[in-house]
Length: 219
Image (cartoon, rainbow, N blue to C red; front, side, top):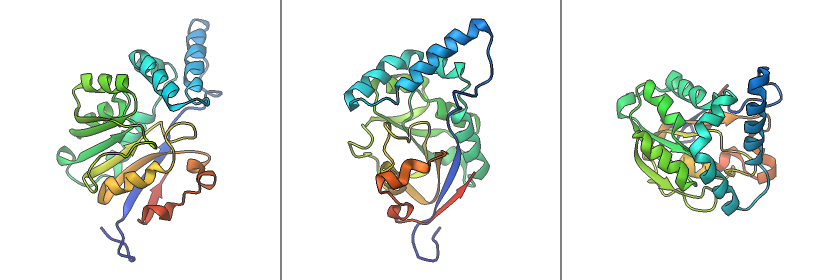
């Protein structure tokens, strides 16, 4: 699909990624302590530190990641999957999905329920990737420090490109969006989280037109 300018067109589907930890439902006294602990763990992931320290954090968190995010009712993976399913018009069983910052594979698990079967996962944590491998959902998994190393996937190979719960200050830098655009086929669906400060574009100096493609977005 090409726009009037002749450039590739990318659909950008946006959704709310993380719950507001100040406004999550009230829990019982027995639950509140567990919730408070998990909240501190999640917030600590966004504190300033070196890349090595961040990867050590995610490696150590991998074994309890899915249990922890369940405590805060983390819905981003299911929201991402449902958003893609609502807008994707191709054959789901044949589609190749690039799951960037895939973690343990929560997004792929949700998309599998909607009929998608082919997944390539990318993450900077070896332990997270091991958990994703154990899910049996991914045909390929790549260890990449996003923003510091090339994405290392073929350009124009993917029907769906997602990055869920990672595109934020102190985590995956906004500049990675350029590489995601390059990985996508013409007319693909690319799904990202919607935030109150969209990708901190002014701070990073990044502009949507830097991808070289027109953008359309839904909320």
